[in-house]
Image 1 (spheres, rainbow, N blue to C red):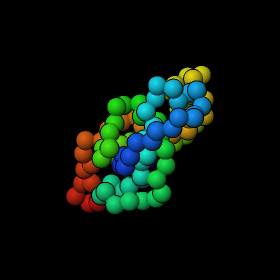
Image 2: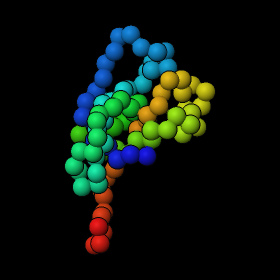
Image 3: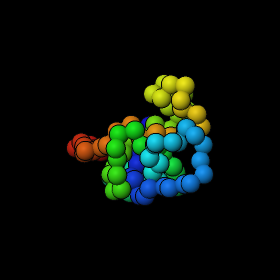
Image 4: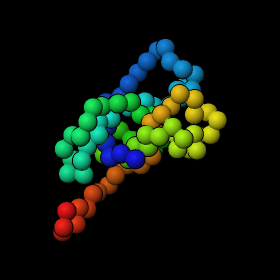
Length: 92
């Protein structure tokens, strides 16, 4: 799983039928301190996240299939949680 920030919404008129009724968001990986940590990628929203939210993204196809069952289709990344806070502790 990866810690990411939602940076936008994606709208497409032509898409695989698996995406019908699902919100697709553009997310950017980030370190726990909020600094960017990689290139942005697409993820299907499973928890009603929105722009600016810090989220937990599952980026493994097998895990996605376990959540969505046979309807997973070509979905590889899915948002599974909205992060309320990150506590790095005293030694971090």
